[in-house]
Picture 1 (tube, rainbow, N blue to C red):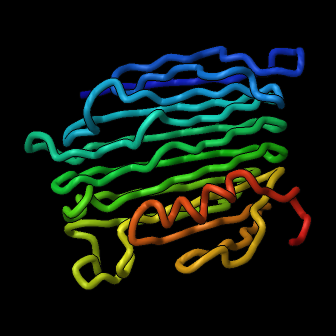
Picture 2: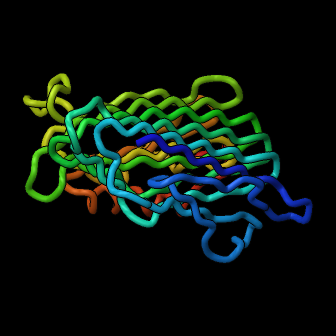
Picture 3: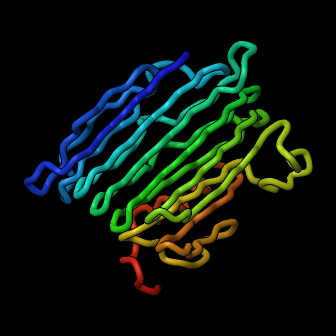
Length: 250
């Protein structure tokens, strides 16, 4: 299956945000949801219109936030990567751009790597100087009481034309060190939260297996590893609601 989705958020000239483009194909269906946010922003949910991703699927999601626009991207449920028929790895490419004065909050539900899946996620985010970003990715290694499938997540976030965050994580069969627990140790879930621009995360150690670190940019990174997704969410969920103005020390 091949599918593409695209959302473009623009300032409406009255202190709010309008969706100039909201287009998707199953399984990448997009729906505007909820009332307008107090800051004039809008919320869009990603709705899974079909099972998957399955092996062989090639999916692409493009997000564009214009000057002065504010967009929050959520999903209605976790994404479940499945094995499907014998085929190459499924691939999801996510690109996002945020203009100066724009704000993007990317806070989807976790990706679950079901046993036997082979999935690649390529993320490229470019934030102009003066833009604001909160970007979260959570991964669960297998459903309950099953081994993890194979997932490779390749993420690059740039701010003001300079790379702020670059990270590649490979889990499951074939991942270097996976059999020896050298990747996540005893963890079965991992989450990351990157903040860039106008709001930063308060640095510190919010719990066992977790840390919040500054990035040059301005930016900050929170990461958490847990035995299940609840442990990760206990750390990262509060941080999504608590940020510091850029340049303010905790």
